[in-house]
Amino acid sequence: MNGLRVASLLAATMVTGLMAGIYGIYSNAFMPGLAKTDDKTFVGAFQAVDRAILNPLFLLLGFLGALVLTLLAGLLSLKEKALPWIAVAFVLYLVTMIVTIAVNVPMNDALKAAGDPNTIDVAAARAAFDEGKWQAYNLVRVVLSTVAFGLLGWALYLTGKSAAQP
Image (cartoon, rainbow, N blue to C red; front, side, top):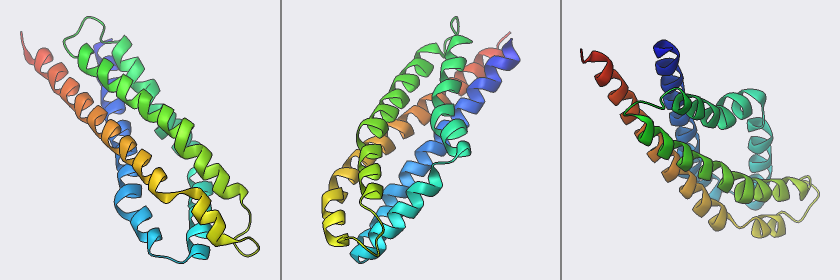
């Protein structure tokens, strides 16, 4: 059981870190890069990237996987010193998912529903999207998932430290 506990915690840490990185890349490179483009490029590129990221690998292993693996690590660590850190990481990542589902996804979907950038008023579609709001909520996701990643890393350290003690 100890091997499964450590493996689930390691996997949760890795996948949560991956998700923090994805949100961070959106915040630090993707959105600032798109901000410098014309309306047609912005709408078309954002739509294409949003369609591409909605794949089983990202959705099941990454987005949902981080939560499920953290829950599993917590359930397998009920009597361990690492449990509080895992529990807080779980809650923070859960809030990240709620923000994603409640704010970012509806905004993404509305921009995709606006239609083909070759046939719509792209300036109106971009203005309706509200880049500032999307970026602000994405920053919430960056911070929460990064802190969750750090907490899971600390839990992993505590788990290794307790295993090393006689």
